[in-house]
Image (cartoon, rainbow, N blue to C red; front, side, top):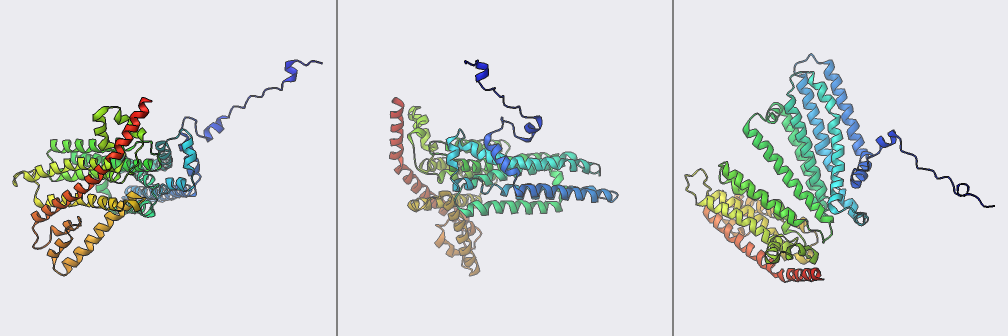
Length: 496
């Protein structure tokens, strides 16, 4: 007997639509998958649950005590101090430290390879880990708003200043988290662990100190003076600038060699320095501050540029070689390798030394004057960045973690210079410091030494920096045949 199609085929069961409660309990599909994965793990973590519940219980208890003692003078200010202190403890100490193992755990467990097989690139992976921690921090931030509303009824509250201050603390937490996530991919435990811990302890101690001058703290965030506004946005811009570069360092750590993240970062660093110098000159800032600020802004991009790998793939050079001779010349400064990083560093040094020489040549009575002492200090700090780079190239074959070794060399130079200077000053033999003038940090101690002329220190620093720069340029030019080979292979690939 022939059965009909309706009798022979099983009844199709359509999938049940998720209920409203199920949709509210899960994340929407529009969110990035990396963010959803990290949020699901982070919200169940014992650290976050303990911080969240502990903050709510403690602030609730404080509010009950303050409400019963609402007749006391200054109860509202005490509540504000407590809210700020414990909110800072949660978002400036605990939350950023949760990012110190974000990338290293993935690298150690070899799960990054599986992520790369998906459509997630390195930027989305790192951004997902950062945004997951920030999402939890934002939940802590939103959870204290009811306490601020109750605090308002105690009276004497500068609502605008306290809101700006809390938002600023949240912003600093975001920047610190980006820094910790960015360096979490480094293999050095000293860099990955000690630096975030030092930042967290320093920020917490700063908040404890601020609580003693809480009124002045809120006066600053009232932003009722031009100087306060300039300082506020300058510090916010500096924090964003630094956190961006260290975040990009984390991206570069896990990114394949075919991805070029260096060109964008170097262009950003160059643009920020030029724009900042123009703004300071237009506002008639004191001239000795201009090269100092330009040098500080150059440190993040220079540090990354001098510690990059040298491997060059034809695919990386292709966007430059397609633009002819000018494109290749541009690439010599902006290719993702340390030889191009040396030329980029020299470009920034040319800007800084131009500012230094111009300020030094001005009449000594000029408001924009820059003296021998300021010149020597800035010149010594420049040498402090060049000296570890030279040591890095001399030990190149034995180094894997370039940025970790660079920072260790930098710290060691300052420690050695401090010890030598302590001995020289203790024995009242400061002129003996000339024996160690090849160590750039020594020049900082020689400036105030007895029987040592500041101008001689300045000239010795210039001579040392010229030697260091020449050595770095020679090593960079030695790598040009390798770069030309990669450019020729890129052109050949393009023709095929």
